[in-house]
Image 1 (cartoon, one colour):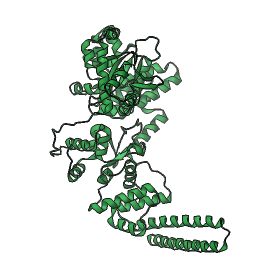
Image 2: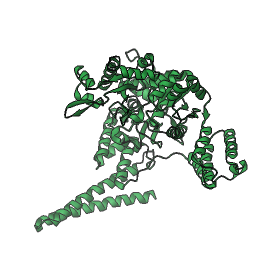
Image 3: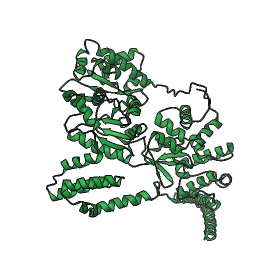
Image 4: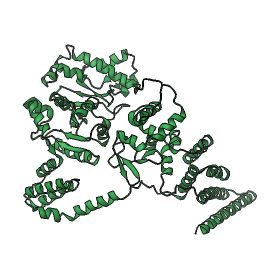
Length: 600
């Protein structure tokens, strides 16, 4: 790939609004003067990704620093799309309409890793095996489930035989044992490599760009404890991020205008047989924020089509609440049976499933029905609890007509008058709602870590160095070294950057830092404890704080030496050094006092 000039990179970064680029991939919320998002790099249930629009940088306050939890707009795209730095620059340029001849066909080209290649060869091997005599019973099973040859081909379904045939085949293709193991296609035992998915139907799992990242595999053995097993965590496969069939469904969503979330791959295929290719699944009932973030890129309308049994209905409740919190409109399949979509279409036909989908339940209809099954409202205590949980959902509705409608439905179900529901809500509910309103009106504040004096002093020095080149010169002349190695590393990076630029661009500086230093730079630039205007008094006071601390450490070390010595002459010399250090400390403390008196 051709090298991109630094001035072009800087120009793209300056023109790309980081909150809008991140918002292209995930939901971004404006709170006060800040932007927040649910972090897509871990299973985030509280919005912990903070975005500084002014500085053009982001940081997740929950991700470990070593995982690269902060950076500029290019770093986010690199991490989210799993691309290299140059490819991220091109993708950001394309998003903002930046015109530049990158010297290629302008298509996003992502090099496949060794694990993608192993998975592709595994798919080809298993597809071949499904059509052998050994795979005949597995293919017959698929046909009995109404999955025809066209569907088998489209979903790349195959069969992994026994006797470790897959591992042998992959070895012959030239793959190393360690890579086959890392792809979770085999395990190392005392007998060599053993296939993980032996004697199972293999359904490949692709990422949003259509690259193979893993498998879900079904056994036909009725004695097996696990009907389905999935790829374990690998360099490519992270279950909490996987949305099965997204790469196919995203194209159809443009026409259908909504996405169906089902429980498993067989349900997705059943829905496609019924005419709904806009279906995906979350590989089980535990949908995550990360998965919703991926779907959010293509639509904000969801139809939840989990099983009709108790577990499936509970999954609808959890996923629906999470989706609503993340800005989705949520509908629920009108499934009055205890079957899943695959069973419905096999038992009753595609028309029955279509009727359930075409006339779905609104979210509040589902809530009224779901909790009515949970609580015996003939009992007064249960009725109060039923009213409480339903009212919590009603009061979150934005449309006053919707709120009025569902209060009237609740009144009819419970035989409690509308006036009572409207005027006499349980006190704890009204307080909780009022609290949420007050909270939403407050500007968001970033998590604040309690800091000791030394950490605060170091952060203050670094902040002043970012604000003024004069502060850099004062630091070099009067201190030049910070006690914490990480802070010192950042100071040296700032000095080096300043020597090559006429001003400090925090986003550009951040792009040159290691994953460990990027979160520190974010904390310093966005600290609410240090003003964004250069303050030379604060700088010098912070330098004195560190000098005093260093002198105190030296004095303590000398006192320790004295206690271990017997030679009075040597003791006397060390005592003299100690007295001189104490005088220096007193002098520095006097300077601090003068500064404080001037400030007051």
